[in-house]
Image 1 (tube, helix red, strand yellow):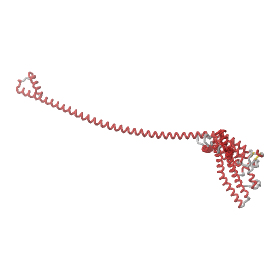
Image 2 (image 1 turned 60 degrees about the vertical axis):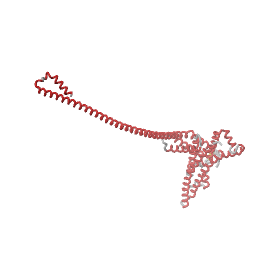
Image 3 (image 1 turned 45 degrees about the horizontal axis):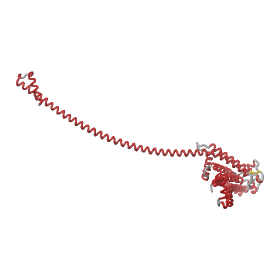
Image 4 (image 1 turned 135 degrees about the vertical axis):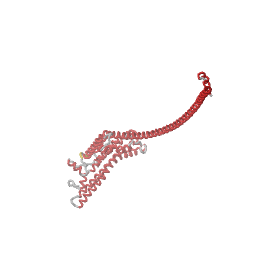
Length: 159
Length: 270
């Protein structure tokens, strides 16, 4: 165990190597490694953000679905109500139309029977006049008595 | 293992524990330690640089680049656990110490006689391949760590603050001499133990490999006991080598972490 000048040489060797490693090698190797670490951290952060976004999107999609379903239910309900209303209105319209038609028909029937009885009376009047003219034979001249006969017929028709 | 050049076991051990050196007295240079540590520093730096150049943030790293990135990331996390604040330099220091010390310690796993034989091809009479089993090697690193502890202390507290801490902590200003003695011991104990620990572990490991290799001296021919010695050498050598992998990495890890701990302690205010 003899200490001699060798250690001076060793110090020099050590310092040269240390200088080279510190100035050249470590910066060279640290840069890509740190860049890679940063990249990995960024990637993980991006993945986290993506995950979060996905969750948010899922939640909002669910919300949208719920809203849409609610909306559809409302629309359906409204349509149902509307159809019932429409049906009801149509029924009512049909009933009132029927009633109106019935009334009109009744009026018509009344008019018709009045007209028919008028007609009958007129025909009856004519028959009476004919019968009377046959009875009185030529005494009754249609030309001279037409006026009389017409008034008679009108009287009969009027009841 | 065959007996080298007719050495006795003692000579064999002594041979393996002798450095290739030039100069004399204090100005002796251990050529093997300096050469191996510089070569390994260069090789490790080159591998790190070569891989760092290919590191790309847009693609997954593969092969050597992935390995180097893994080592860097692991070292950086170790430092982050210990050292608060801007740790770029601390990571570089830890990475340097760890990779370099691992490379140097690993030399212990080479077969004990191989580096010596290889060096003798180039005419070197001695060759200790393990720079961390040379106290000069580990103490040099500890001295640099000591210097950094001082520099970072002053940077964190200012010269006045740091000197005041020397004088007044931990017993208060009235026990100034004791404070200075205690602080001196505290300051020096850390790097000395740091250097000695690594040196001691690796030296012991190397010595054990040499002792296991001595079993080769008992292999004298095709006899029963030669066979036992041969087998024992293989079993013990393999076992110790496998266990030593743990020591190689563990000691390098300790040698990486403790300087960071010391510097982060040095920056704390008392």
